[in-house]
Length: 258
Image (cartoon, rainbow, N blue to C red; front, side, top):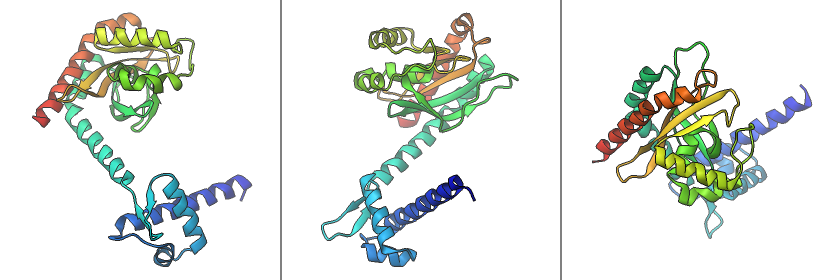
């Protein structure tokens, strides 16, 4: 086995043990000591101690005053976010199918994930040449249509984080704060965002916001495709269909919460 292979195997083993410890803490009705965890999992106490300390550092576990450990609420927050994403995707699927039929392009549904946007659902087009995205894939907020539209409607509290993470991917990527401010104002005026090769030079896109019952932009619905097909003119032509899909998805979310 090569040195790289041995290193990967060690990392995999460490990750596996860390997850076993986390599962054990989460399943326990009471906090556990290092000795108890080691006995339950047949692990070396020093290894358990090291891994538990790492879990605490990452806020997945917390130490009690008596030096026992418990799983933190970070797991609950992650689970809650996952369930929320699944609920949003289920409610927006009809609007997504409608947008595929209206445009013939791949459609994706996205949410904010820190200073990035994450695709939580997608429907691929039947086009031979199309843009490929994966569920769980992320991209910086400032350079893709779905990210920009979510940034625009949450700009007050996301501006600083977006500016700090701005890097140039193509000659079209916005990297100037003043230019970003102007772009966000334009997006809010139009009701949708465009990407003309700002993240990947050969991929363009357009996205509209999806609003929850209280008016917060919680997701973005949009399309992506090759720049040779999604020209500026084509984007202008299909913009009403994208905005309508955002409206339909918003209505579905609002109706489910009423």
